[in-house]
Amino acid sequence: MLGNNNFDTFFSQNLISNCNVLVYENDSGGTLLLDREHIANFTMSRENECAVSFAPNDTAVIEVINWNTLSADTKYWFSKATSYGFQNFVCIKFQVNGEQTTYAIYFAVEKVEVDTKKWNGKITLCSPFKTKTSPVWGGYPLDIYGFDAMPNDVTAFEQLQHIAVNLAKGLVIPNFQDYYWNDYYFVDINKKVIDVQFNTLNLLEDIVESEDSNDRSDIAFLGIANKEGEQLYSETKAPTIIADVPQLDFTFIYQGKSYIITSAKVFITHSGSDVTNLFTITRGSNSISLSSRSSSLAVGVNYVCVIEGYEVELARPTTDYYVKSYVWLEGSAGLLDAQAKTREYYSHTKYVEIKCRLDPRIEPLDNVFVDGLGTIAIEKVDMTFNGGFRGSLKGRLVRGMQLFDPVMTNLQYDDNSFSFNIKNDNVVDVVLQIYASDRTQHYTFNLMAGEDMTITQNNAPNLMQSFEEKAGGSLEDDVYCYFVNDSQQQWEDSDNTIILEAD
Image (cartoon, rainbow, N blue to C red; front, side):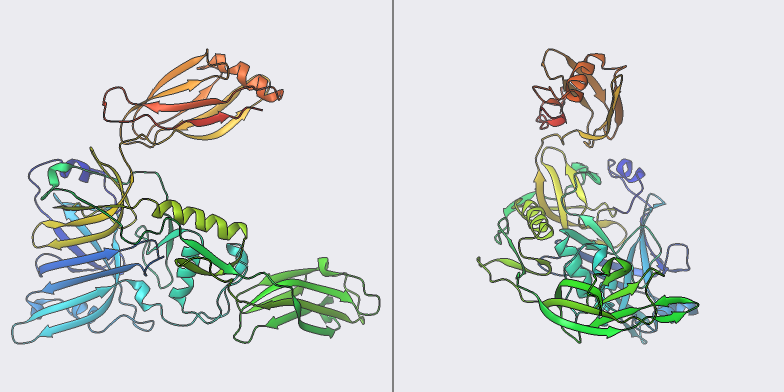
C-alpha cells in the first residue's frame, strides 16, 4: 500500500478534487519531472501473482503534451532508456484532494517517443526488475535462507525469483525507500493484515466473481534428488604465515555446475585427525570455501581438504503440475514449507474483479477489504488518469466475512504472574472472549479495530489457576480465546486461538 490514511476519508466522499500524478527523479525528494500540467493521459498496469506463474510486471505509459516546454533536466532524464550505466529511474506518487500518497511506485524508463511537429511525447515505463538481466557475479551465499543449492547460471532477476518462489513469498520493488539498483522486497503471500478498506461508494459496475481455471491448490514442489556423495575435490597443503599467524584456505569452484555438498572436512595428513572445527565453511551457488579461523594450526604440517557431493538433478515429477525447486532437497523441511504455504494461497480459487473509482494506494499483493464480501488478495491493478483515477482490481477472495483470529504474542508466566498480548487485526471492533481450562471462568474485553491489549493476572485473575496447572504439567483442557462482533450480524466469529495447550 502506498500509504496516507486520509485517503480513507477522501474515498468515502462523492466528490474528489485536485488529483494529480507526480513523477520524480529517483525518489520523491528529488526533482519533480512531470505532473498534470504536461500529462495528457496516464495508464498503468501492475500484476503480481507471487512469482509462481510469471514475473512481477509493472508497466506505465505517460502521454506528454508541450514537450518543447519541459525543463532541460526533464528532457535529459528521458533522453534514453534505463541501464546500469544510465540509472534514470523515476518514482510516481499520486495526489488526491491535494494530498500525496506516503510512498511511491518505482519504474525504469523503457522507451521515449517524441513527435517534434506536435511536440507530444510518449514515455513507456517498466518494472526495474526488467532491467536485472545481467548474470549474478560472485555466487549467491546459501546460508542467508538456508538453501541447499542455487542454480549457477542465472540472471540477477532469475535469482530473486528462485528465492521468492522457494520461500513462498511475493517479490516486489519496495515502495518505502529511495530506489537503488539492487532493491527488492519479499511479501508474505498469506498475510492476514488488511491494507485498504474499499468503500463500495466507488463501485462503477457490479462486482464480478469467477473461478480460477488454473487450479493450483495441489501444486507440488519438485526438489533436488537425494543421492550418495562422491569425492569432488581433494587438496593437500600447509599453512601460510601472515602477520605471524598461520592461515590456510581451501576453495572448490563449481565451474559452471551446481552441486549438493554432502561433506566438507579437513584432516592432518600424517595423523588423519579431523580438524574441520578449526575452519569456517562458506557455501555459495558456485563454490565452497573452508578458511582457517584459529591460530592453532601447526606450522610445517600438511593438511588435506576433502569435499564430497553430487551434481544437482531434480527428482522425478509425480504430478502434472509442479514447481521445479533448484534450491531445496526433495523432502526437506524448506521444500515442504514452501509447498504448504503456496498451496494455501492457491486454495482460494474464487477471483473477484472490481471496476471502480480507483484508490491509487492499492498495489498488487495488498489485502483489500470489501464490506459484505470479505478480504481480497490483489493480483492486478489497472489505472487510468486523465484528471481523476479510474481503473479495476482483480484478486483472490482469501477470506469471507469471518473475523481474523486473535493474534497472541509475548506469552510469559511464573509462579505469581502471567501476561500475554492479544491483537485485533480486523477492520472492525470486536469482543475478545477468553475461556479458562475449566470453562467456568470467562472474560470479555472490547478491542477496537487494529488495537492490541495485554492480559495479566490483574485484569483476568481467575486465569491464574490455569497457568499454575500448566506450570505443574497438569492442565487438562486448552485455554483459548476468539473474537465476536455483536454489532454487525454479517460477521462470523473467528476461529479459536490457543493460549495454553493442554498437557
